[in-house]
Image 1 (cartoon, rainbow, N blue to C red):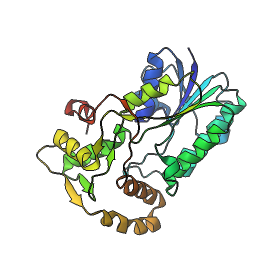
Image 2: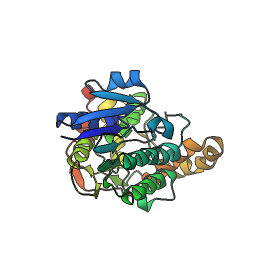
Image 3: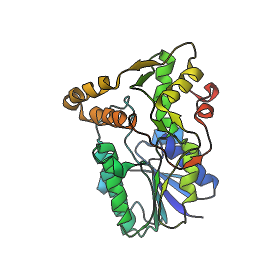
Length: 286
């Protein structure tokens, strides 16, 4: 079994990865910013290390003694997240700081949770920073595995809250397709790469949905007495210049949403959990 250092462990994907790795008998240490929050979310974790990935000094020597690093680091794309760090600071520079330490400590393998089609959408900050770090990792000399989900179901939890309030809205036609993967299936994909040769692994869910179908499914399961609203795509596009002046972080998130709802994002159908099963009311806390 491997000694694994896990970054981004308190996010939905990170928690699922932690449980999966531990369930397979690996010795997992989680790197966290808030120890008390981590203790609430990561019950049963063998060891916690408190550090700040955007501060190279706090990471000095952190990878010593570990054979594998797994990074689920990433700034949230949720509009409800108003934290000040940028995608560049967290998704790129934070991961670069970890990679530097991994190389210096002789880590053998680095598993990175990236984004599907990042190399094709580099004009957007969210995708560019994922692709930039992926390229750095490929050239690092370490054994690498880059996991690329088209969307993670936990990122739709905000939609469930909107559905409950009757605010859920389809922007534009809503006919572009994607196959989101649950964080539980994604955790299995990540765990399966441990000890495997370097590879890029695009990983989507088993089922394909249009953007409007995703909203309809969530609305029906969460608050069937309410209906999904619609607004034209130009409304979001018209708002982007104003957000660019007001709040750059929110601008980059809205630009991300505007892009993904206008393109099909279909990865190999690996995951088993359907959106309907994921959003069953008894499993939600909205």
